[in-house]
Length: 180
Image (cartoon, rainbow, N blue to C red; front, side, top):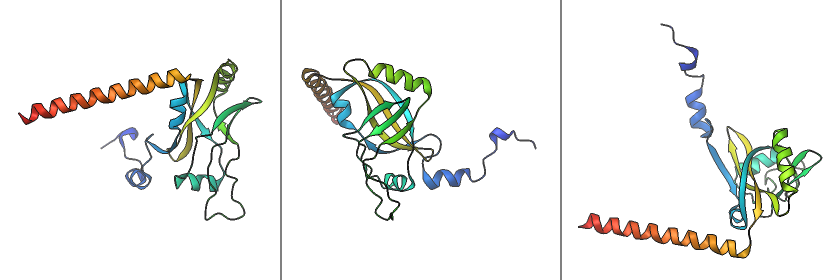
């Protein structure tokens, strides 16, 4: 019986999926920059590849990294991630990387041009939001952002708190209704 190639299982497909758990486009998040979402109004997000050394990848897989001080800068038509802290790999040798070196981001030319033009505007910047593995490759989620004023931050916190209180009230009403 003939079975089309698309519907045939790939060799080692089930084994590969269960082995690393990140096939099929699932994201295994390594680090998030929650402070960026608080301090900036996110305008647009992009997914960028990262050019990393082997010890950086091993250190990322251990999940010990920080993006709190990180920012992206466009230099001579290339995007660079600055101040992202990926600690040295503890089993690395003399080939270990420096923790806060700048790392090249892989983006399409039109994305880089758009980011460069927008980041030149007053008050706009490019910040990293997350580092993650997708299909076994390290990726960075970066965002074009505009800095929030202090009253904007307070307003956002107030809205978040109001939403949380309303969710609690709804949950309590549902519990009371089920108890009756």
